[in-house]
Length: 83
Image (tube, rainbow, N blue to C red; front, side, top):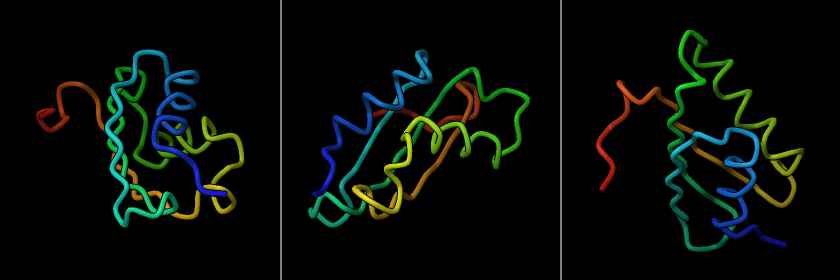
């Protein structure tokens, strides 16, 4: 069963409380998403460590309920402008 974007956002925010999260359903099927996650907690961490933090927040849903997630992470000073 596909995941809702709001569920993905809630899981990320639960694990990374200061996160600003923007999620886009790239195919409209509830299985393929792109996410931008911005958090001060990413500061000083490698891109791999940042992504591991987000994937850990998804509690094993990747590859199952959540088929694909194109992930972009940033600190507040390196993030693109939010619309």
